[in-house]
Each structure stands twice: as C-alpha cells, then as structure tokens.
Image (tube, rainbow, N blue to C red; front, top):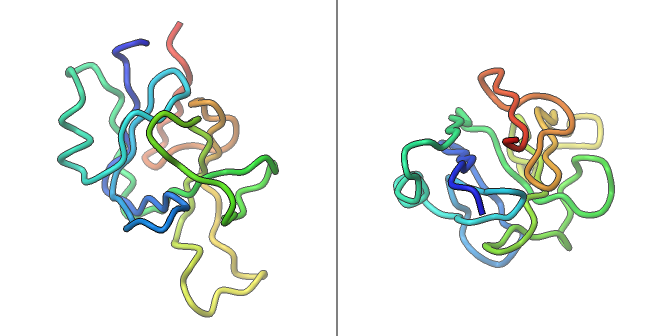
Length: 128
C-alpha cells in the first residue's frame, strides 16, 4: 500500500451504518483506511497526504448504481472500497424532495475521482 493517502476533512461522513457520523475519511489505493474526527484522520498521515477540506460538504457511500443517490445498503468502512460521493449538503435533511436533491460535487470509485471535482477544485487520481 502506498503512503500517499487522500484525506477528506471538515465535513459530514455518513458511513451508512448505525454509527455516528464522522467528520473525515481517508483512503489509499482504493481502500478506506480511516473514518473519524478530523484530528484522528489527520494523525494517520505521514506528511505527504493529499488533504481536502470539505467545507461542510457531505460524504456518502456509493452502491453499485452509478448515481450519487444515498443508498441505505451501501457502507463506508475501514478495509472497504473507497466508493463514495461528495454532496453539497446532507441528503437526510428534512424537506428535501426529489427535485431538491443535494448536488453531487464529486463521485469517487475505487479511490479515484471519476466525475466532478472535490471541494476547492481539487481533482485527484491514483498516484503513478
């Protein structure tokens, strides 16, 4: 596994399980390596990580479907695949209808941005 990690901090990370939300997630080579507080996730970095401030954006797991719909059957967990979407707002917010679904800022499959961009204009793929 590479020591080049991608860390998303400063947001809401919905793991899809019956656990509390996290504020950060990290992955390397397509595998989730940490979920937790900003401080806990930053602590795994050896200094050469790609760090993205989510600015309050929401991270949700992606299922097999290609869209960014929050799916109850998909999960984010340490050791699992880094398949996720970064949404502009929390999809669980009351009052959101199909017409007002949160905007997908980026779709990440196997740790690589496959559509859109991470907050701050950061596009990042797997290191060579």
